[in-house]
Amino acid sequence: MSPGIEVQGLTKSYARAKSPALAGVSLEVHEGEVFGLVGPNGAGKTTFMGCLLGLLFPTAGSIRVGGRAPDDLELRRATGYLPERLQFDRWMTGRGFLDFHHCLAGLRPSQRAGEVTALLERVGLEPAHWQSPIKKYSRGMLQRLGMAQALLGEPRFLFLDEPASGVDPAGVLAFREILTDLKQRGTTVILNSHQLDQLERVCDRVAYIEGGAIKQIENLRQGEVGRRVLVVRWLATDVATAFEAIASQVGARALEVAPERARVAIADDAQAAALLRALHAAGYPVVEAAPESGRLERLFRKGEGA
Amino acid sequence: MSFAVLRALIVATWRERLLRPLFGGLCLVFCFSEISAARLTHELQDPVLILTLLIGAGSVGKDVSSGVLPLLFTRPLVRSRYVLAKWLAVGSAVTVLTALTLLGEALVLARADLGVPRAEVTAAIFQSASTVFGISSVLVFFSVLLSSFADALLWIGLSVVPQIGHRFVGQRIAEEWQAFLYPSLEWSATFDHPVAWFRVFSYFSTVTLCLCLAVLAVNRKELSYASG
Image (cartoon, rainbow over all chains, first blue to last red; front, side, top):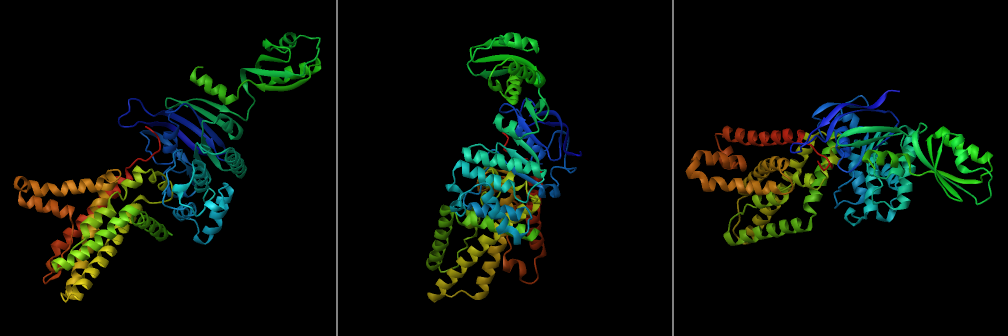
């Protein structure tokens, strides 16, 4: 598969900053991949996106998006961007804003009305607000409008910076559906979000960035490797075999056992499956088995040294 | 297609500039006050400077400070075209307002039996238009460098310098300084025979220089929502 985005040794220093915002970042994002960025505030995620979009000029290193330089106009025809702190021409109406960007994107004027209407419906913005001035929009409505402008022209490369920020639960679900749909269409998405569960649901891979460097890349489509805690819950009943014994049979270690639940340290996905099979064979009516925290939460905690 | 983009940017700038209640209202009040003043002074009043500063201030800087510009530049938009659109939008909007004001003044004077010759009105409109596009080019250049409305403040500050400092820097330098900040073509001084080609060349070179510097600066401008 040809790389959609290639970044080699990307360094970005700001004039008055003591340390670089990005320090030698190298990365390949495959075409059609949904790639997440996670990390603490000030880690360099938005700077990274700014460089990928050609809005910031790298101090060193190279960037190719779809085989082109980030400021290439042809690439920009195939790019959509939703900034975290999106600012609008607040005197415009929502529909007028999309019409304006449809024109700037160089899309066909004859298809403008239909495409803009379809996008406003797709992001779930109420038709009653389409002709209202943007200054009257709520935070969630602004974010929906921002998503609609990012989707103009069905971009091949989509850069989303905190897309669900300030959006109501219905909006979060709508955005998730949009991302799933984009993924099926083969759009390459770079998604920066603090919402770890959202990233975990839609991303193929997630990079943990801290101090301007990628500390780790987690492949969410591969089985998890590495010790973690599984919480197992079962119906209250008399079972002859002790939980600890079953856990040790499969190589896991029971950390805490209560009458109806247990916390157990497991090595990987295979060991988790073996444990559940053994519990079932021993007569444990297991009703739930879930990781104590999500993969990204663990990645984040590990990164923060928690 | 590129013309459509240019037109969209110009129309958006017109609406943004003229539909602001405060600025739009101030422009109207000023135009009517100039028409009234013409009746009192019995001559045409030139409203160019105030209107250009009111409408042209922050043409680019406002887009930077409000955070609108990064999103615009993720579109397939040549940055020089954006600068050109801003200059044309400000220049054309103020030229139309100025021409209407001057025509209003001429009408008022004519009704008071103080009619101004048509040629004089035409020359005044021409001179105003040249001044508007001249000052606008300087303002657009300053606006690329400074955020918000600081471009107008800088222009006002720099235009005061020769008034105060001409004794120290010399009359000639003060005049050139003024010519840079206030590029203008006076009809009679330029086009009465023989044509003052130096004036024409000087005017267009100043405007071109300012626009080129603006394009250069905007091409080097980094834009991001990052806090760094």
